[in-house]
Amino acid sequence: MTVTIGVHSSNPSLFHLYHLSRLGFAQEELAPLGESVVFHPYTNGVRTGELLTRGVIDFGGTGSTPPVTAQAAGHDLVYTAVSAPRPEHGALLVPEDSPVRTVAGLKGTVVHLAIGSWQTHLIAKALDDAGLSYADDISAERSSADSEQLLRTGDIAAWVAQGAELAAARRTGGLRTLVRTGDVITDRSVFFTRRDFAESRPEVVEALHRALRRADDWAAAHPRRAAEIAAADLGGEADDWESALRALPWRIEAVTEEFLAEQQEAADIFHRTGFIERPVTVATAVARPSGAAAKAA
Image 1 (tube, one colour):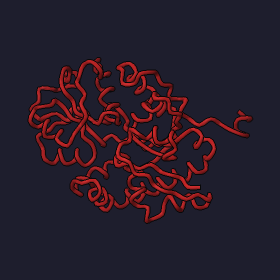
Image 2 (spheres, one colour):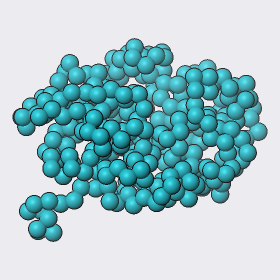
Image 3 (cartoon, one colour):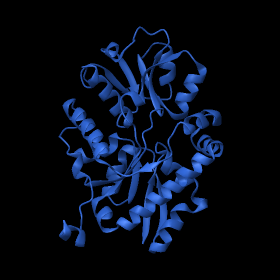
Image 4 (cartoon, rainbow, N blue to C red):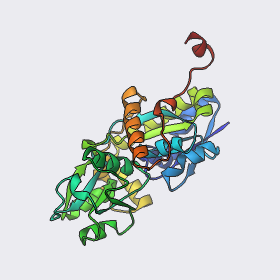
């Protein structure tokens, strides 16, 4: 059978697994199981839950927000693994001379972010911690190619930047970090699949985890080459990509109760502010024991 791995540019581990496919990490891990692999590139990680449910892909990964919104939309997902925390992956920036000194100062302003990504989790929780509401106290607008310029000219109050764009903005200067991601959320990469796939083929899921770890190990050992791959495919300067990629942990970990609690906190904030329409119980997005394991339980 062929396993289809979903790939988009916002998940560094999957991005490099795909672009290193010539090294055969996924193929080598799956071959002993009688499986082959194909990659399905797409542009928006928010669609991952839908693509899994439709059977377009069998395995995917995003930041923290898309699996919560996918659960809220009724997709039956299972978390399989997470990255270590990524405290330096992104930041909420304001102009250096901005009167906004704390998150509370954002009340009534326009903030640019990648709506539906982990950045929504960052902003919603930062506002919640400050006693403000994502729904009521700011105007959240989707980031665009000119977000940095709009911030520098004062047309927006704040902007969430990540990766190479954050490194480039800091290199240019004139901006100040209002919120460091790691001070608010753990900002993990999150990997998940359909329930039927997770529960019927756990050995395939583990093989995919091994492939991801091999890709991560390669990127950690070859940051300059990994940066050149990213710059060639996504644009930007290789130096900025190298700075961004060196800040990542490049470590895949098991799903823990701590992680599920982080996700539940995000889900509760999203529901309270109307970002999702119905409450979500994150703990249901884990694989159920089957066969002998279920009988033993």
